[in-house]
Amino acid sequence: MADRSNLSVAPAGFTSDFMTINGGTLSTASASSNPATANYGVTRGFTLGASGGTIEIPNTSNSNIVAILGVIAGAGALTKTGVGTLNLQGVNTYSGNTMVSAGTLQLGAANVIPNGANKGDVTVTGTLDLNTYSDTINGLSGAGTVDNSAAGAPILAIGNNNDTSTFSGVIKNTVGTVAIAKIGTGTLTLSGPTRIAVRPHCPPGHC
Image (cartoon, rainbow, N blue to C red; front, side, top):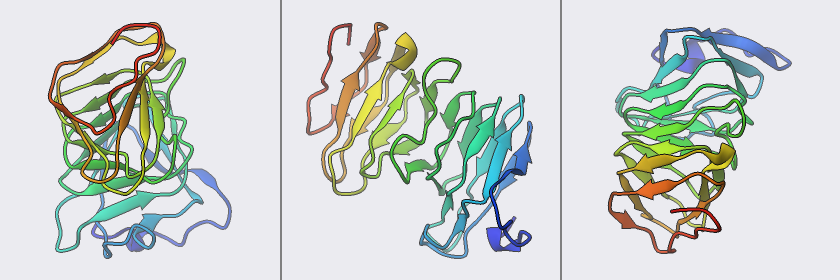
């Protein structure tokens, strides 16, 4: 899809299954570098089927940030591919894993990644950009990058649902500061280089 503006007119009220992906890929670009205008609005809900869904943001002449303002629900996993940026802003409830395979998954609000019982883990081989927002996740794995691209001091809390995980990638703060909080009774292993300005905080448990 060259641009989300090619879709039909947005529904007047929230429609949970405006877009359903079940094992397929939505390849979508942006006609603007501003996620405030290059978005799927709050009434356009996404549903991920049991086979999961991939959202690809390919490279274009724009900086190519596409935002989803509505809720992403369903039983499946969310996979982000392509070199562009996917910005999430809804209170998402999908049950599967969150996988950043390429490009950037950017937070557009706090707590947009589902976590807790019956929710998935996060795997980053691309970039997870906190973008000044804090979030709580279950496990964190992969060899990608966790970063913060905007002013602020976000906290990424890792280990909800008592998950055990290993992250071998880079944790840094391009702008602002980043804190890593280890939560739950599982074990969090950070085996890659960390460049965060705030030392990871590990309450009772292991880190």
